[in-house]
Length: 228
Image 1 (tube, rainbow, N blue to C red):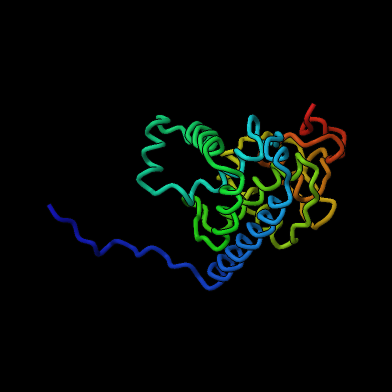
Image 2: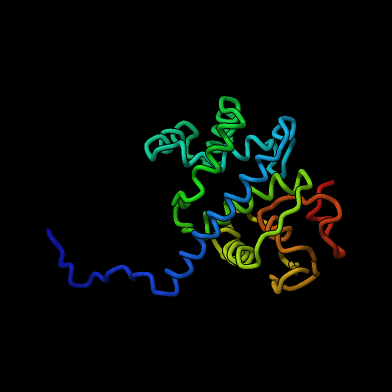
């Protein structure tokens, strides 16, 4: 039996403000990839094997993970998910380790630089999601290696706004009850309660469940988000 389509409402089209924001985020994604490529080019061979804030991953695994979308077709992605029984984290870990083992550092660096303008977006995440992916994983290794970053305030706000939204908060599952994250370098805060202070780029890592190096955060409970 056929049903009338008369009650169906068309999906709302993005407004001008949404398109402007998407365009700005896409430009920031390209800029972030180029900056990270330049920093990667300055690493020594030994640096690529140093640990990062991503538990169990060296620099090479982090870069292999970030560049994975450029090497995987949609059918390949589905197949890899099937092999991991639908567990995305398990699939991402396995593929990152495999690619890090088979690809040279030159090949990994090429994948970052050559795809600066690539339009990849995480499912349902848009360009803000893509930017968050690049910035967070870039900080995973630059922070661990003590490499300073000068991320633009616009880029930081885009990532912080995204990570503060319900979906990422649920995904990372960081307990921020009775905690206020307060940036010391830009006008941004989140939550209410005991203050944890730090640079915006360090606080976005807190939102992702990373344990920060000693001295990056301050406040009475900052040790809760600091590596032992």
